[in-house]
Image 1: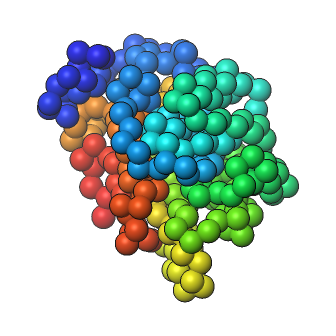
Image 2: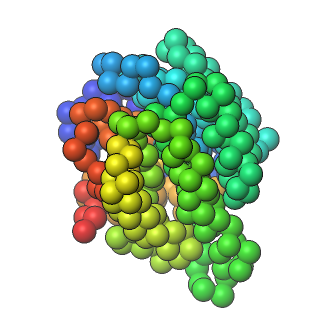
Image 3: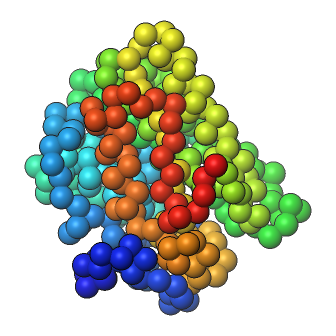
Amino acid sequence: MENQELSKNPQDKYPKPPFPRQEQEVPGNEDQLKPKADHGEHSYKGSGKLIGKKAVITGGDSGIGRAVAIAFAREGADVLISYLDDAEDHDAESTAELVEDCGRKAILFKGDLRDEDNCKALVAKAVESFGRIDILVNNAAFQMGRQTLREIPSEEWRKTFDTNITAMFYLCKAAEPHMEPGSSIINTTSINAYSPNLQLLPYAATKGAIQNFTANLSQLLLKDKKGIRVNAVAPGPIWTPLITSTMPEPEYFGADTPMGRPGQPVEVAVAYVFLASDEASYIAGATIPVTGGRIAI
């Protein structure tokens, strides 16, 4: 992968399908991913865009969340990393070490964000540790690939909505009183909000809801003179453990993009850095697509 990263052609920068056949238990972990994902461990170089900022990242243990945590730390931010349960301990601890290697503070919070009390506790821990919240990244998500409507358990539908959109509402509501003017909320939506995958009906529906929630909340907070910008990032197919643990035939994942490959988490992280920075001070209610050329309109 290191040689491929030297390529100036974005289509050849990272590995292309087919990948080795693989299957993981949900939620998956980084160590079993083949090929390994690039979260910016060796490739992301900071330039001081977020010096002194205090950030909360849900789903920060692996995948896109890990890449955002690394990028934020290298830009000068302290980071609270939220994750679900014991199965993710190793990935979360590894991410925290990467943040601390940058000389920044890393706080771990383990808990199910479908529970509003856990969301309140997460915010309280961030405020206790940092004094405030400057950046809230709502990134935690659940998905499961299903071939037909009849295969989708009703409980799985509820779990997907409670994880992906209801928890986002809980966190924004709890965090907003602790966010000063100039703060930023960044939500993770998806290419599925524009072009839904037939195998991801519940997940795609939540991502459409996140798109609307982002636009609406942005207007609400600006109308109330809060000075908090709300935006979203819409990733396309990104190579993470969630893919190998929830999708059929992950060895061909991303092959249908114009780039001909899935994106790497570090390629998405730069969008979060930009939206969190003062350089994006006139951007609110917007969504940045990072989709490998798939059209998001």
